[in-house]
Length: 178
Image (cartoon, rainbow, N blue to C red; front, top):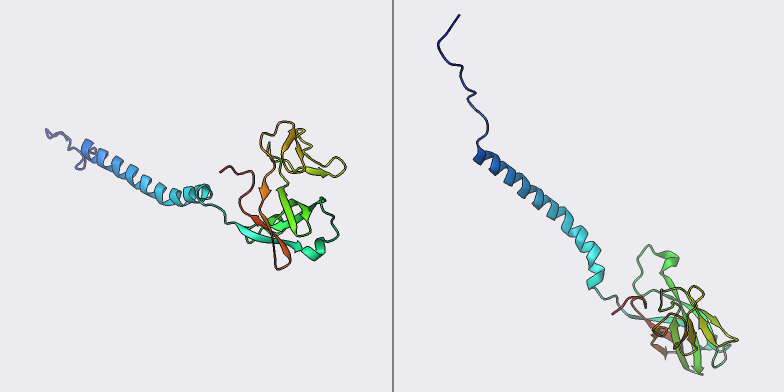
């Protein structure tokens, strides 16, 4: 059966360039909207700590009567609760500070972290120095740098005695720059 009629073209035919461009742009636009809806909360969660100042709070250390055993000029390590612990932090919410008795009701508190790289410093009572074992940082008993790579003195916390209890104003990690 021979026919002179030409084969019929597909009634839908290939998509027109305008339709293809519209669908491409629609797909890209919807993908961008979906990505923003999913991504913005994640980015906000990751960047929020950079813009929020951690709260500062007076943390109780011990009653002055319990510290009577420490002589004036003596330095001891005490534990305080982090001012902004997570509900599930448990023991990790505790941090240490070096507490020195200056007078019967006057105290100084120093961070346990070296200002060089944040390593924990220890108190050498015989030498009356704070020593960082990692890189040889040495600090005088008042927190000033004595030797080694640290450029800044030990971070000192404000201390007060209220209602017979020694309290330390704790806030952001002492290693976080202002």
